[in-house]
Length: 224
Ligand code: ADP
Ligand code: ADP
Image (cartoon, rainbow, N blue to C red; front, side):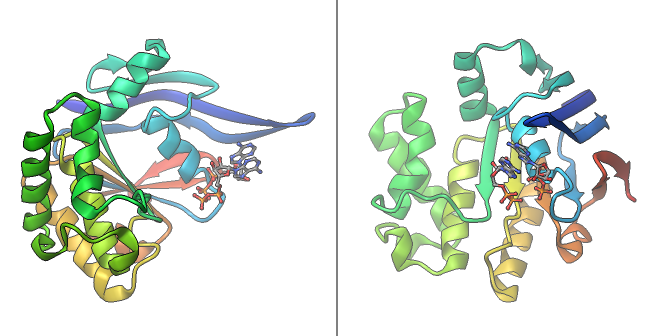
């Protein structure tokens, strides 16, 4: 089963009268249970591609099917629902809500889709326990280390069992120990059948996945 299928994606930014073609004929297929890195230097278009794959932005032209769904034909409401149900996002800066505790942050995606509070709490608690944070449920993000915050973010990303985990430089703010721990978590999640796409400029991160797409001058090269 194919989770991500892009065809001839092109993204052009307009800066005044200048056109910048950031993605040029990008064709990517990612199967269920794949573990992929999109590797490229700064400015190569990784964030742009991530935003399109995450249904946060649309390409200038081309097609994108996510889990069989024609994303570019979806309305804004449908896109919001796709993001909430089909994709778990993980960011470099964790993007946790500072006033909420760990368990409250992890509950949010479930509450958004109408799961009852008690059930959401129990599911969130379970995910945090699996990630070794049983004793940190009621801590706020600023009371946690970077590595712990990223584990909370991973728990939030997986709590709704999405079809796709999309991680943008997930180890970029972590020391090497926490970075290694986070990669071990991704590997374990992949062994359990999760489809994972990691966007990174870090070759050491990319070397730990099953397949690398290298992005350069807007073009994608497989295992390049
Ligand atoms: P990366 O994530 O690999 O650093 P980006 O996708 O952020 O690359 O950016 C690729 C190129 O597109 C860069 O030259 C950047 O300055 C440019 N760019 C990104 N977003 C915009 C935008 N909204 N408008 C104009 N140019 C942009
Ligand atoms: P990253 O650290 O992921 O490479 P950037 O710092 O390149 O992120 O970009 C942060 C945000 O600013 C992104 O949403 C990107 O689309 C936007 N951006 C990047 N470059 C430009 C630009 N030249 N003009 C307008 N927006 C930009």
